[in-house]
Length: 337
Image (cartoon, rainbow, N blue to C red; front, side, top):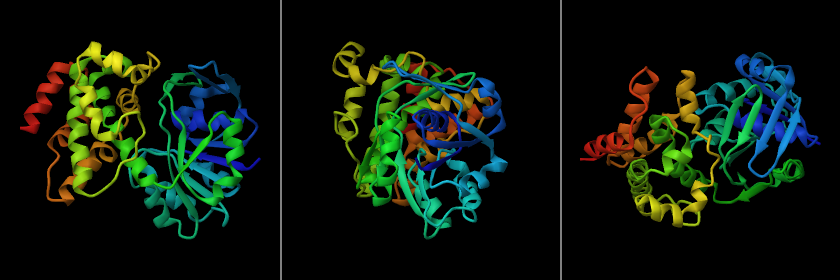
């Protein structure tokens, strides 16, 4: 089994790394002291809605010991928040093996590019984790939604596919990874709405007013991508451009037509909500902020996504949270003009 280092062991990192370790892979998790202390001596417990319930004692080291762990690894999975990508790249640059493979499993569009810029000569691949992971505390992490990990196609993946398959997390190779990341970002625009709503994803998506907020942000982003000539992959049964139309349907119709989108664990929430709850800086600048920056580069505006950036930043500073769907929708409509 290849040596695997998970750099940035938060919810996604602990879940993916833990599943790999439970299947027999040689894994070391690199993360913060608060995560190590939360896991404690009981190790990791990893569950999903299909009956997976595994425990493992994957080795966990603090960030200060991360360079040594990365130096020994053949595969490095980067799962830090996007704001930390440049720092991680600088940490990895002097220690990586010449034959190491680095995979970015992060939100946003440009993390793999940022890693490549500091890691010349290293195989750096973009990846995407489509499912939600809930930190239940005490080392327990639950996969609350469906999806297959997608990674930029490269021959170097061949050495690691068996380990992921054994862990129940098979990799899907993609030649259109840029389009995949853009489509994932479109779906992730719901993260801000969920964080501001302050309720579980299933409860939020069951309410038309919140879905209308998401639809406003998605429609604006979709038109911005079209203006840039940037394609989007099809990650759901509906093409990306039709998703906003589905979201605005009445609750009863939406529940009947879009049942798979509500097949979410009742406790699942967005990672952005988790960050707000913990008093951490969110990834709003790498999700809705990406849309705003792209629009500005085209001489356009993205007022709905810009407003969501403003509201989430205000919430980070202790401002309003727990918005009702009607209040948030009214606010975003005013922003849109």
